[in-house]
Image (cartoon, rainbow, N blue to C red; front, side, top):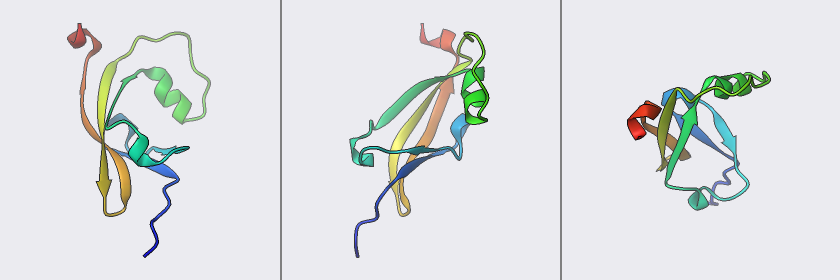
Length: 86
């Protein structure tokens, strides 16, 4: 059976649930752990709206790269408030 070509990686759970990020490299080359901040602009950009002036992060989220029967995903691992990282 030919190897399935991956053109995107889906986020499962958390604030990015259902988002599919286009790939320019193989999923195996992506980081195993993805850590990023979330603020109001993240959701505005997903909706196609322009970002607003600087907004403080509301949370920091963690996603782990995982291979499934259907391909690669980033699975939600948790979130913390930015003040908890100090």
